[in-house]
Image 1 (cartoon, rainbow, N blue to C red):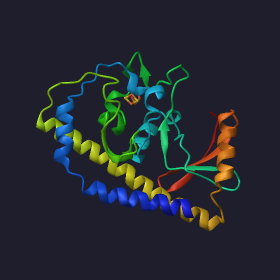
Image 2: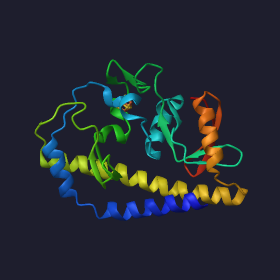
Image 3: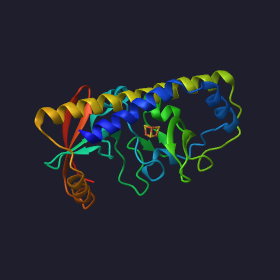
Image 4: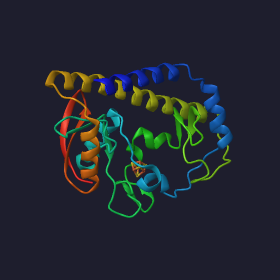
Length: 231
Ligand code: SF4
């Protein structure tokens, strides 16, 4: 499948670039910025951060806490000729409030703080490459700079190294999950004579946006799990 092949090529390239990434640079960024959480709760909302994507070990942890707290990740990757979507993993559900607060957020506090997913532990740090508003493709290390929290806190070398280790763990697991998914979806489509059809993808996304129920297959633990989903 063409799209899966080109997506796979992209992630394999990212995996190589990530392996060559220099940690001391990240440490400098962390210590220069000195981010400190002020419990504003903003980062735990869809309005500010889109969705909380779960790497598979985090999805397993959330399933143990509450299996109804997950939903297929909302950025579907593929759509077959039958109008069924495919996506690489789960995200946390959000509440039905204006901000789209995380299902586990109460009074700006996390109900599962000690067991929160890795992405929540490393936020606002990240190590991945993307294109910015001016079209420059480069490493991005801090999300939402100056839009939430406090800055200028003192962060020691040891703490910065711990943040680096956790961020590396998350980013590396994310890339591996994408690569595994792309290989699996390609194989799944080949064996069943399925095709990714962009026109059908666009149409079903419009249907979904209008409130229609759609079928989504989520890749998790080596299999595709079927869900019916409404916006
Ligand atoms: S799990 Fe906790 S820390 Fe993570 S987004 Fe939800 S409320 Fe925030």
